[in-house]
Length: 352
Image 1 (cartoon, rainbow, N blue to C red):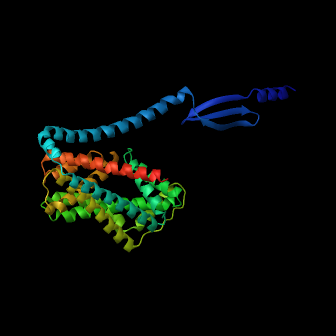
Image 2 (tube, one colour; image 1 turned 180 degrees about the vertical axis):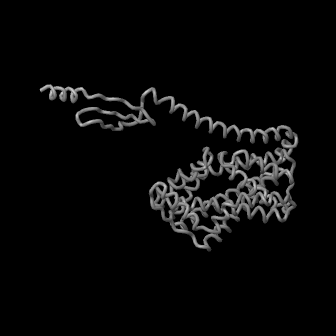
Image 3 (spheres, rainbow, N blue to C red; image 1 turned 90 degrees about the vertical axis):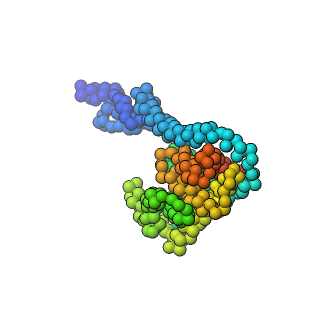
């Protein structure tokens, strides 16, 4: 009789303990059936807030540090412009707007060619969508690159491609291959263009070294498939992608080299709107921009290579025009490129 009464009391007076760990609430129940536990959701207790606050402060500090570094680099350019303001004001007041418009048109052509190449490349990896959907994925990912962290741009492009019928694995493989091809084509275009100019041998070695990972993936495109399969095993998923043929690789390389030529031509036109820049120096401007882009790309901790690309561009352009003018052109190049990216994203969003 006493044992039954004791058992009834244990069942009626179940004890609940709240265990807090990793932001989860675990309720532990002691009763007749023994001890069991269940997770009841996110922790909202005051005890969970310090860990969340520490994580939030860590992210905020990382973002602030990256933006501060980019601001410092851009600050040096602004300081250079201010110190040479007399030359800058004279160049701006006598600007030849026809050359400036031609520069914007050449940069826009480079971006549209890069978007079309992405459309063709994603189809080669089996993740093809309609052209307007590919341009949408390209345009939105170009804006996402300004968010600290290189993965945001990749995530946006894969997500948009997947929403319009493409495969996530194919889109991810195409993005990896595109990055490798951009690096290789930028280095190759820079080396070829620099060969027509006088330049330091150390710059040639730096270009080859920066593009080395991309060269490996271009020479062995199946390495991307192997890399994705390895990553898939870590998350217990079977990832299979279609690999491009050797002809596709060569064609993509040629298209991206044309992209850098268009960008360099745009920079040459912008410089010519402010200062004298003979046509014979066009290969040098192509080499300057491709080198500056590659420098900004490999610096992964700055969003969109902000600051680094402009600093390298201004320092290399100083061999052709005065440094204050070179700094103005570097700042103008970022404004033009970002404005065109924003306009392209706005057009595809409006067409939605």
